[in-house]
Length: 213
Ligand code: GRF
Image (tube, rainbow, N blue to C red; front, side, top):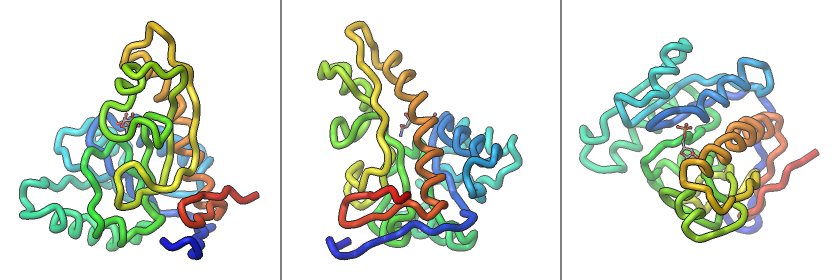
């Protein structure tokens, strides 16, 4: 997106797809907030690249539509993502929420859903992108870390930042204790970001997100 382009999120009842590969606690937080009427949206699909993802099981138990596709069945990453995009388009998805989805989204996918893909990352980006962000923070010795909800652009963990939450890092923290502290904040700010999105309150200008009144 050039500096001049402005994107404004839609004010509407949203159709959300969640993509996950594991536990799915962020998916649960999003779904809980929707069920409690805090977000004007519905989850229309929970997708996974892992057949045994716990989040997929939870989604089934909650009566949501689920889909698993085996990446190994597709010759290239583009082929795999093209099918995912097709499945999302079929369901008229407005917003894709990555929630512990352990595959990199291809440019093809990013371009099909420009400003319509969010991710949650367990660190204060641009610090500690990539895997094991909590361990990176503990090993580095920072005093504060946190969580970031951002739009997904082609470059990994580098899209426009929507919300962040800060947590302290203590001297005796381990990757696990810090992850637990950060996770609580993730469950708070991810639903908040999706709420703002469908209230039409997020504006992306260049690489900055403005939260409108
Ligand atoms: C979270 O820490 C999230 O920030 C990261 O992957 C983890 C997913 O956890 N992207 P869960 O599957 O939502 O419980």
